[in-house]
Image 1 (cartoon, each protein chain N blue to C red):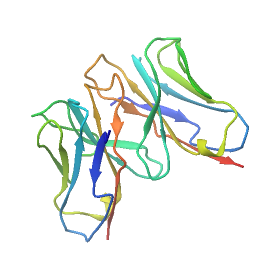
Image 2: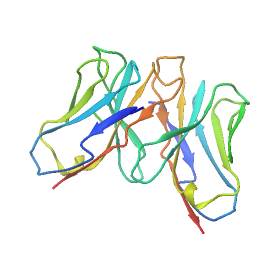
Image 3: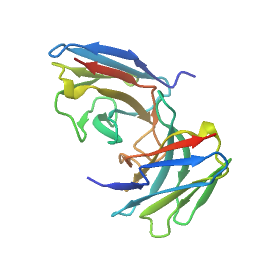
Image 4: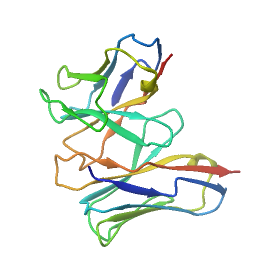
Amino acid sequence: NAGVTQTPKFQVLKTGQSMTLQCAQDMNHNSMYWYRQDPGMGLRLIYYSASEGTTDKGEVPNGYNVSRLNKREFSLRLESAAPSQTSVYFCASSPQGGLYGYTFGSGTRLTVV
Amino acid sequence: GQQLNQSPQSMFIQEGEDVSMNCTSSSIFNTWLWYKQDPGEGPVLLIALYKAGELTSNGRLTAQFGITRKDSFLNISASIPSDVGIYFCAGQWETSGSRLTFGEGTQLTVNP
């Protein structure tokens, strides 16, 4: 039972570089989410996809784009990385909304230098 | 958006002590959830609450859905070193389909 799988686990980027964080779930969940976690600031929602074919902005979408490739996969792209995007990124999924909670991946630790 | 106030922000306790933390909201929530995040991992669901007044246990953990539906509490009894981590509350203020709102977390340190 893999659950939610995120790749890569660690990444160092130079300012201005681009990259895509990958997320896949094998639980047949409809909804998927991208969060960032910074010290003392909890979990902040970047983007989410309530169902396949839809995406919406969360609290902190600036500097990011997402793609819901299919029901299983939801990717997060940084077009031009900035030091302020140094963070730990978590992908999560749920059957539908938050009623039964989210299942989280183990995170991607990103450093932008 | 909806705000959750979680307290305390951090706790330093001795092994064997009991721990209490809580979350409050200005809005009525229909669902309260408690997560634990181990160092270097993603949050994992501990307890889910769906009715006002509900009291639910998971081993040494007990959580309650407040009567006003605007708060929730998590208690850990007889703490052990592996309880170390960040505990998050999360709530949903509408029926199925609505996103969760997360508290800022309580960092728990347990000294052996």
